[in-house]
Image (cartoon, rainbow, N blue to C red; front, side):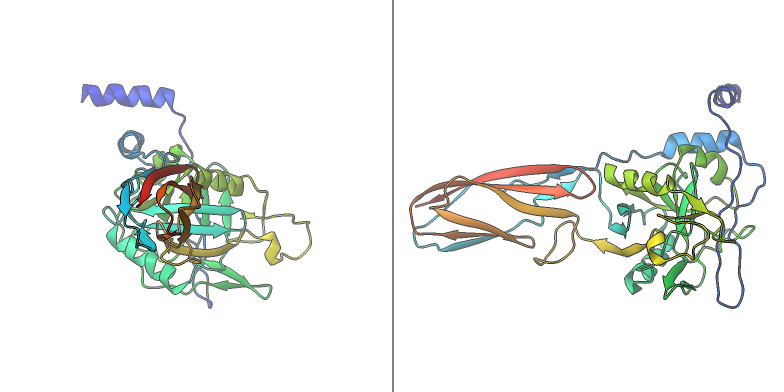
Length: 343
């Protein structure tokens, strides 16, 4: 108890307390439900200690080589080799499914965490797989606090609500630190989350959100440095008050009192689960693979289609070293090379 008391004293003196905020939103076409955070006092020590224990590091998820393609030899009769590159690369520190939020301000990639919030991830993916979040917009931005979406789309200059599935049970296990994504819910009802989610902008959110209304369920984290940059870009946009729940609406090139147009909103082009590498040439994927080196094109031609590296031999004997580069849209790249001997 003395240790905890001492720790609490240190934390109180070294970390500023963050006053409560609210997360608001609407549901249903016939009437409006405000999605707000309780403002009851929280345990400063518990929230801060949980933040220290569960905080994850974003921005270090660059591509790495997981399994190098080995050098090999082919006979003179061989005309083509096809190598599947699906297992060649990985994103450092990423083991779960990744969802891309492609917005008009850039893309944010989120690694989902079904191990700590299985029902919440399942609920979120139901909306994703139906395409319910495609074409929606960020309807709330509180600088230094949250960026919130998932509830509304803008069609023919009219706001439409995203249909809601039944609410999901609260699964608070991970602290609301910077770069995490959590579910919004009704004040006073821990098990009321449906379709709206928010990104945490600050580590200090933990002192505010982890001990309110049963704690707000974190179900993923932003990966890649570019995703955090995009989040900060959205957070830095000016906001306008267009009536709740749009009283903190981030806007782009808007001039008051003009009516809001689609181009004034931070819209989501799509929200989709993406594979690490695509199975097809035109499919979306986290990594973009290209041939960046071929030391002897008179021996072979190297091309990539989806996840397949295709080597076509000319019939000439010799050696060629082929290099593959994997670029990640979230930030970073890596390369690998191997040598083919054609007898």
